[in-house]
Image (cartoon, rainbow, N blue to C red; front, side, top):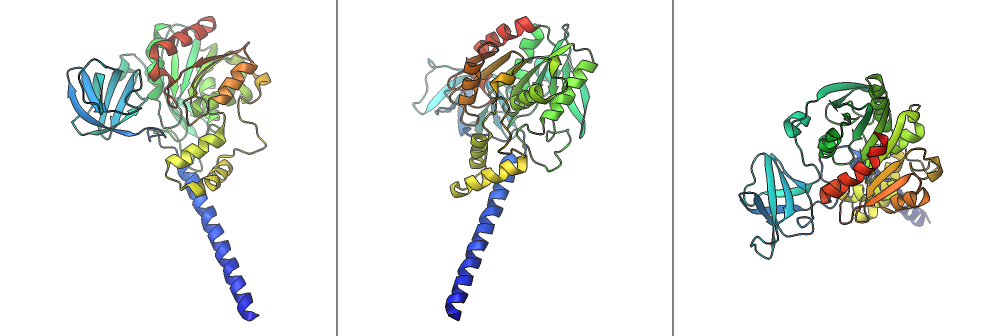
Length: 376
């Protein structure tokens, strides 16, 4: 009897220990998924080899990524370049793709260099990257000063741009020339966890659940310094922050429109993808997701932003597509179907997360022009 009891106790202790270890591992994986690291590659970004370069073109490893249409950054440690469309008529090997090379903005593209295709096209600031005059400003936030770039223009409707996962405030520069041509002032915000901004108190990102208050501070700043109303243009979790702001901000009546690029409205799927991208073993992913939801304050009893179509009060442009594996397209499609009076869905097929502009810059900007014209 004593032997059986001792054995049962040992088994129970082992199971408890294994369970505790699994929970601890899940918590660790959750922290890895939520820790903000702007510029860290997101799922679906394979490394490509540079085969060769020539005047105005670069030859890369042939893959689904290197064949994507549009305009992209090429990134590696110490290297950044900008590539345009595929050049199918240039002779090349069957395992290669030739793209137009628009600029090498940092470092050099040497043969055999390993690069990643990235939605971030520009490096630097609006002046150095785009030739646009701007001011470096500090937006007073609840955790401290939030750095932002302000690009002035004539209108009193301001566009506040907010980046998302795996990016920084350089990413929204892709739309700055368009907005400047239409005389719309732009406030491009860095928020908690970004370089130069205060850290989140727990050091983690919350998928917009807490970060939206920094966007609220930016709205307050814009109204203080000359804006009569604002359009919020967010990518990924930046789009989620915009949805939170229009639902929860005391200044929501001064928001006249939302532009949502790849909005995260199904945080469960996004957390699964982030955990997998950070190398979490498959069996631990459900634990990591539950731990991340708890760590980020994403409670089961709280509806995700945008899940109540009846609560919308302003026009919304959603730029999204069915090939986004990080933020599912279906919630965007449902929201547009439920509120055709206010929501316009511009579908971008073949585009990864946060890269709707990159795949089709002209189509993206035309959709943006049609949406913004009545709000100017």
